Length: 220
Image (cartoon, rainbow, N blue to C red):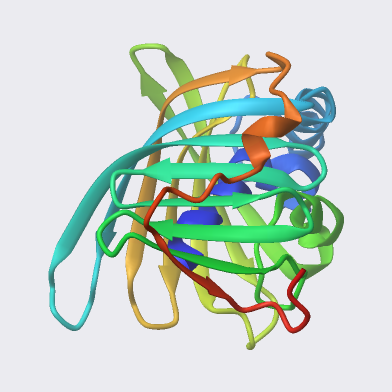
């Protein structure tokens, strides 16, 4: 579940970072920060199609999947992949495994180890050190590569790299390395912002015959 939820951060993480500029870039750190802030301040909702690749250090195995993220300020999000669906309306979290046909239901809570757009928008400046590593040229234009390092030893991330597209100022790729040396890469294949996603997207209808495990202390 953590791996899928991390994609939420990819969409919004660059909004309020304390970025240090590398020498020789076309933009100063303050220029980049201002552009990214303005972009994400105007995003009320987004639909992102992504490709995910995870490499496990111990087994050396690699798993790949593709999926769609729906998100809306709230925090509300829905992540659909080939194997699972994770949904929250900001109060309840549903995690459905298509393989086992099982739904886990829990309360949504912000913790020191949780990922959410709102949390990172507010806390990224003090929780992470960020450096502008380099520029890269692609067929669609220029991208800036940022490296984020958590300031706390308690973080389950070691590092994160973000590829930010010039002009659109959207994150197109992210690489995450956690404390278990597991490396996860997300590539954004397409993104649509402010399309008016309805709140019904962030509720989950339990499939017929699914096994339901309600983990809430006081189930309703």
